Length: 127
Image (cartoon, rainbow, N blue to C red):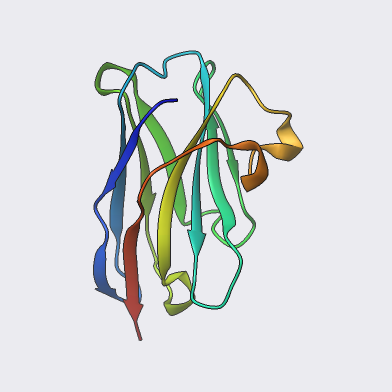
């Protein structure tokens, strides 16, 4: 399985921005579905953004559309999550995940279909 390492989390005030990075141990170019998930205390892990690396097709949860952007850098085997206009409700542990191959569109934000996970990076947004 591909190994994933997240970085870039931190504490910001509402309205601020953060950029998360997910470095993969092997090339994910054209071969993986990559997702960003988050889990707040007492809540289930939810998908926020995903990308099919083969075509750069992106998917977003309604709660982050227009604020978050997922992107890939194939040369660096890295996927990013640019988070703008952050809200206190965005506070959570953020995880990167990977699945070999392309998932069906309706499964791209489904955690059950991803089998490689990073250790997570904490994002805290204060009001």
